Length: 400
Image (cartoon, rainbow, N blue to C red; front, top):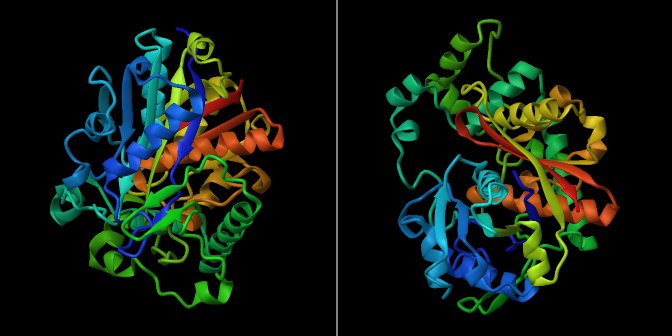
């Protein structure tokens, strides 16, 4: 197997997933078209060199249906020879897109692949596809498929995470993200012109700089009603040692829904010689894992542990971790289970503050990790995300 390298990683800003959000007026195809053209300009890429585009997208419905990885390249005017594959491993889809691309390049199947993801949650809302496992309670119970917030509350209960601790994690995410925004750390952002609103969106919109512990404490629990409706009983039956589920998660310490897209250019070593550019990083290894579906969001930890164990590494051997901040309690789980120091984990905030455009989040996080490793002069990092049903995916990257 040959090596797979990352040559560039770009993204749109994350827009608020509302009609007044900066990206809302653009279709997913329009959002991706801008990134494709930007990638051409930044890397001198001839689109004819690209063998395939692989995109994560969770809600493959309406504007995001019909294999958007393929149709978006056609919409952008790229050659019909460019293949397209759209993948869905829930919220870790963007990482899986990169992993699949790396496997294909390493096997010599393609020289250049673009991976990434897209999710326009203001236009195609979460659960718009009405999947039975999310809208049919009896079917969901049989599959042990729960909503993400319910899983986060279970994790909080198992780990003894208090509401105050969860709110403190959310506040830290907001403060770190705001500092990174002000200092210009998010260098992978490509500004997006919205001709409908007559604006150019150049920064993440979901950061709430005015957040305080007092404002967070005033928010009601978001998933208690689901628990009372039968979810608590299902979770307690699956965890006999637990006597009650603590409902600590609110809109303030949960991920913010967002619009966004990201692209990562991967290739073999020869691609860099053809383009006249150096690779930014090498993909050392990738891992997927499935954990307790009742915890829903524990796969991020499972995949990261699998990757570390296979490589014979500990958290001390990794310079930075960019792990999916899927609800505050999952941050506690990452810290405790993987023994990650706070100053290595999500140092520029996570999706609680920055927003979570589901299929794009993993690829966005990969670019954020590369930017921060380079800024700090560090070498090794891990990016990982959780999906529903306990799914998780992780990548180990090293700067080239």
